[in-house]
Image (cartoon, rainbow, N blue to C red; front, side):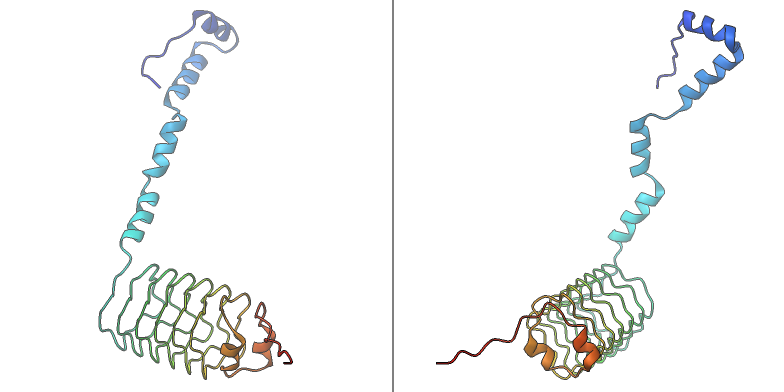
Length: 214
């Protein structure tokens, strides 16, 4: 809106009769001060809140290649954090927010990730053998080729998780949720230690191959 306001004399006369000159001036002032659509749109993208969101994404912590055995990340917010190839043996991530975090080829042996949120995380090739994963949320995560041998999976959620070639031998999977898990085979599940609860929560698994008589 420009600073110069062009007034229509005829309009002013009609308004003057019904509302008076002071009301007309107030209405014109309000219109002049009101931001246009494009001004509001620009303010939306340049607002402090929008900038803060961009800063959070740019400042995702990076621990790639670092030796951090026994570190304590309890309940920390580590969204999109980079832990690729990191040594995290016996580290503690209890209740940590690890959405979208990268753990490719990380060493997480005997780590504690109980109740951690790992939705959409990338754990390809990660070594989680003997880890405490009780109640962890792996929904939509990538665990292709990961080693979960002997890990504790009670109540863990693997909904829509990719488990292609993941090692589950001896993992305690009672009560785990494997509904719609991708690339999970019966052989993989049978290699776990589970109960009827865990079996009940399975779905979308391929049927056992039928034997054909010669």
